[in-house]
Length: 378
Image 1 (cartoon, rainbow, N blue to C red):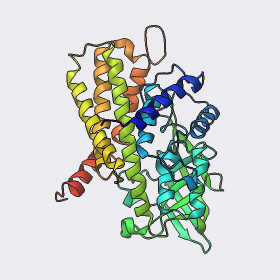
Image 2: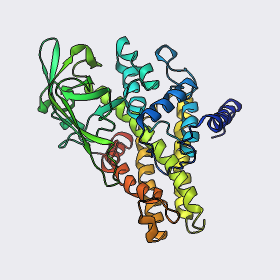
Image 3: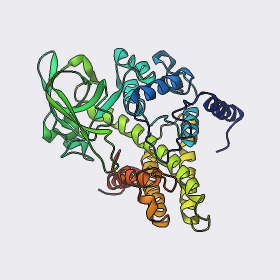
Image 4: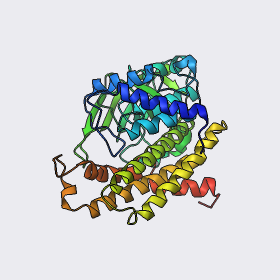
């Protein structure tokens, strides 16, 4: 993809802005993955607000809802530049709101719900997502969290799992069942939940990396006003598909940039000849990404190519980290930072295991691509 003059100047302006504005606590923290090492949430909130006020968040979103109404390709350029400097951008404190919630509200929400988008951009509100359940992960149509009609409100009871940042979230975008289990996807409704409402309980999940940004959310007869329905009762599946298409594409983009960063760092300690095969795979993934970008520039939707990108790049990232930990010797396994070890490699290796699960497992995506893109039989 050859960038035109405007996009090249935009890229240069970001690099200048980063040099002049990146906070001291973020500078020099060259992360090799899509999560940030900073756990000071107020610092991350201030950083996101600064990005928004500088015009680097909500770049392509409608102006009437707080965005800047510009070329969506600029958003991807900004994402790439901030990730290359190890700075949080789309995948940080406000990631669920930015990548998952806002696109759903803009596409399916009423005017009051769309007005919440600006608060997402400015980090005034943090959101989480309530989709997966212990017995319904990749098969969302099998969820059992129940939203019972109680007149002017729904009463929600059930459990959600793997919810990022639920422990600090203000709101949750919740997929719940208003119909019967037999109705599958036809009986689902999308709801906005106040995370401080009576009956909402959050329990963190400690991961293999030692971090706990994922959570379990319990709903015990939580009252949700019917004005909090997004897209209409029974239309939750349609809203969920908007969410998943955006999430898969952005996860794929993140995995591509993370793969490129990780490979560049690995090349500093290993010769290019030994890594030629991985380099070729990264180049192939970049070509797919650029094909999708060209679609966006022509005003088209990402489509199922976003799922292909997510599938390819999540598995590629695992390969790169597997190669790194196999070749670097036992010191790479040390989680504490010292003059002789960099925990970024082992942390990236551990965290990468979940990338082929998040936003749809590789198995689910292969089925989706086969059935809907290649039109193969189920």
